[in-house]
Length: 282
Ligand code: DO4
Ligand code: MG
Image (cartoon, rainbow, N blue to C red; front, side, top):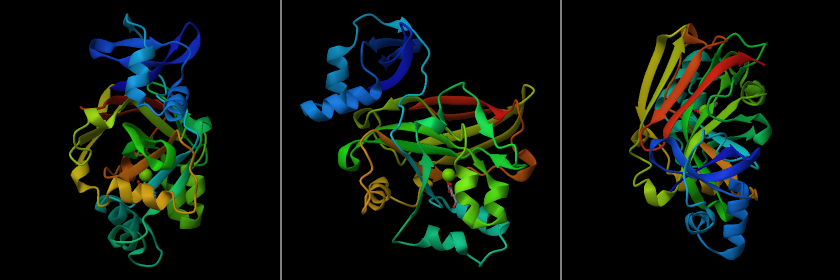
């Protein structure tokens, strides 16, 4: 099932997306409400959504697919990310490669809450004190009780890399600020996404209608199992149901393509869809 949220009768409403941009709203439910109700009633979200959705499909635009209770993100899960960051830093050699190569603890950090999240076609943020902000296209999972993977979506872990580069202790400032996290366009339930480790992801940046950057990665290059990332996240940490975990970037945008206001970033995975946002100073 492909679930998201739409504005319907003036309210944020969960909806089942079908082909051709048509969706069936689920009156009186947000995606968080569906998760909560399905956990109380011990039925799958797909069954609950099918039962409660309207029979008639409408042409509606997906918005933020979930207002997450918390968003967490993993780092250095693709070699590209670790190598690039080590090359950029003046810190201890192999600082990031060490995390990439570690068979034990992965990197994870708090990315924020629904407050910093935007959905498809909403502006993503460039901090006014950053000269080098870049998109980080990532596969993300929506987590239920105890870390159960309820579905997959796309994330843009927008990051002020110059701030991180100045000193790794500034990571929270490079990662968490207004409109730093884009999610969408839909959440695909695990039964409809056969292999999360074989997804071809593309990211493009378009400026004044001209493509200035294009990168690709396959999630087969993800160096960790999603269940390992979730297992570490939940150690001594009761992450609430209805949270999101971003699994790290394998596409690196260099400084010459730093985001400028008006740039359009588009992340695509055919099995999930297209997440497009315009950059703006925040
Ligand atoms: O270590 C810093 C952040 C890494 C990250 O966000 C990523 O690899 O995606
Ligand atoms: Mg990232």
